[in-house]
Length: 608
Image 1 (cartoon, rainbow, N blue to C red):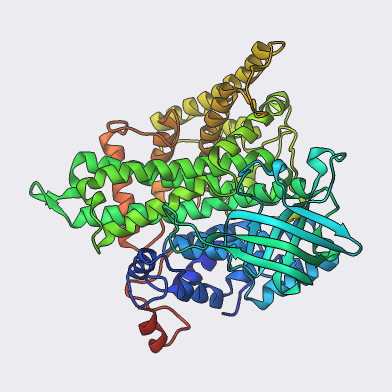
Image 2 (image 1 turned 90 degrees about the vertical axis):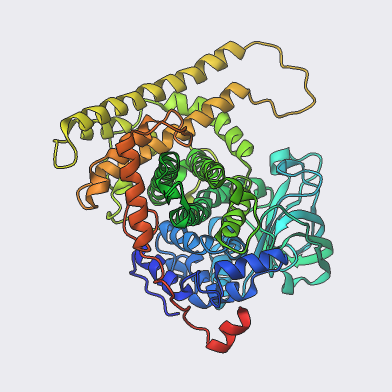
């Protein structure tokens, strides 16, 4: 498909929606029925992958300055969301393209041009080969070796479990290049290996393993046996591997939010559709007050998750150096919002959740299984929270010393952004976070707001009070960091057999900050977009309900006022009937019954 570099991210999503067609049409390559059938057979969805490639999905992982179509980080978010709502196996299999971004982060100009041309030609299937069977997330303990030998390296060892291990064309890996005299953090280097360019030795796939979700994905491994590669395969300097790995993960953790939004949309849409057609107690099941409120709350969580994701994408352009904190916050909280929804929606389905029928309940079950992996991808939730906890002292120290800025570019979804420059991401952002830093200015903007149609004085007063509560909560949480550090200073270290000693109380603060971050993001999106989005968005009732939650991803029956639940429920049903994303802004889905573009009838029939 010919690309359009000036398309907005929403228009780009709508273009891919049209290209892929209605997932309800079984003959389309990315249909719900087809995805379920392939999932039952643990089969890689090759037809769906081919259809996504034909659209030119790969081009959106190469920056414009290298000849690609990556204009805005939000483009990747929206494209991933479109694919993930149909089949996570396809989204996860093809989103490995993002790992070529390590070349834009750590490669020199020659490497960047070379790998950009390779990706743009198509057919590239990268895999991220960091974890090893015996070490998991402890990358510093890896034993894979990359022995320098003249102008080559000799690679030996096994990486597992990784996505696309067997079926990859390129391998991004960490290998030990230092010795016992090298500091632990400088012992490993990063390589981007084209498997067809291995000079000698062997590179083989490690067999797939059965998984709870992503049954159609190639979750396997790759093994190197004295495989010689040219020294130009190394990205960055020798010993820089761990730093480059962490820099890349901060970006990809942020992009994971698109996977959560896609699965979250389909889970809610599937359950809402089923319950609207099911007659119980003389009426539609979705009109039972308990069901109505459950669906309304799930919808509200998706709106908050979207706000957090959109602000993070804009932050990647504007505040790239701050993502050592931000990327972890966004990934943890968006995944939590959607994971909590999945549990509530499963409970709302009741017995149907346990029946493996060939109806849409099966689609819900598949999305629940597949979506659960997002909290594990690119650093599990405990890993992300530990990373946050380690940076809390810097965040507490920087708090209150931020410059006053124009926050419109961060929150106004219409505002132009500078180019996305992934090489600017830093392992340590010195405690800076633009979202938290913007809170005083957001409170000031809210104080100047006048009542209007739909936003009466009572709600405006309540929102102002809630915004002040956010500021107090942030102050209290960061004060707790100082208190926890003071209370543990000078105490003897506990006698544990591990080097990982982060205080659980700091982990708890990191969790609560993740929730607070999403609330502030939602407040900012509302303040800067209410003048051009619709009345439902502008009146702020949804925002008031979100800020009422103690932890933004958690909700209980009876939390919502009945009138608020009804308005959220009505809005959700309107977007469902209009075939729009569950979103704060209008984004059209493929038309009902739409056939995919670019495949003839014979191919479609074969795929079915």
